[in-house]
Image 1: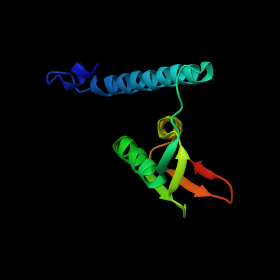
Image 2: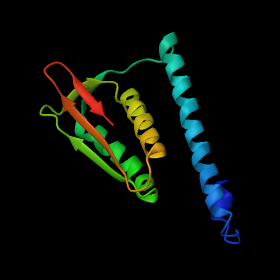
Image 3: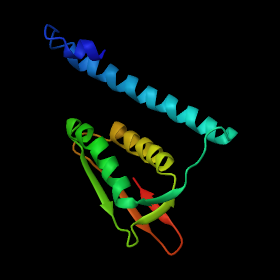
Image 4: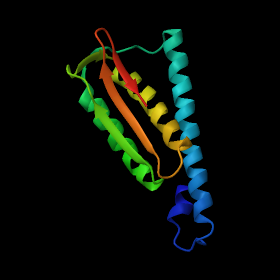
Length: 131
């Protein structure tokens, strides 16, 4: 499908359909990887690597990953960090996967012209990410 999207002689009316197919394939691949990872974690076959991570870096990575897709779909993506203590003790790979799934679904099911927000906040005991 990627090769067809690059093809110069492709009929213009075909391209939108190939783009939808391409996005759907990517979504399915991410879903399959997430399910495999979840199964590995549940079985204890995948180690969880807890470390100190800057929340601003996690948010920046998500913004970079989804801003082009949001623009392409005519959706405004807003990332906000309302956390005073920017350090979090977490497995950033797992948290990243969770946030990717939430943002991917939000962008997928939001209409053109809408706003999708990822907000990091905290209360006295917990960090909270809201999409």
